[in-house]
Image 1 (tube, rainbow, N blue to C red):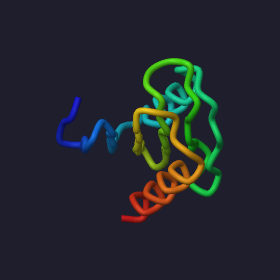
Image 2 (image 1 turned 180 degrees about the vertical axis):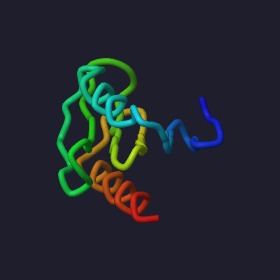
Image 3 (image 1 turned 90 degrees about the horizontal axis):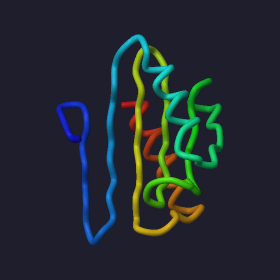
Image 4 (image 1 turned 120 degrees about the vertical axis):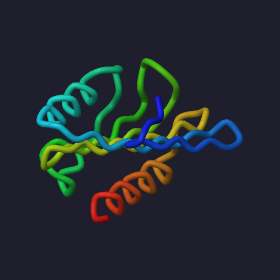
Length: 103
């Protein structure tokens, strides 16, 4: 549900969501999200200890979802294009997350 720390963009059946959560349990929440949903998770160590991209999920819509937790906050960026995102689309999502983490 969009609120003051999230944004949803949609066009032609494709959706991108961006959310930032602050709080002492952000790391626990991120780790839990990476374990749920039956997704393949590729760790993203350049973004920190608790960082990964989820894809090829057995539950929910086909999507790629970057989750990063550090310094008491969690960043989540999801891309839901209607079919499983390609390697190139996942790489673009990782780049977007890297930009968001710096700004």
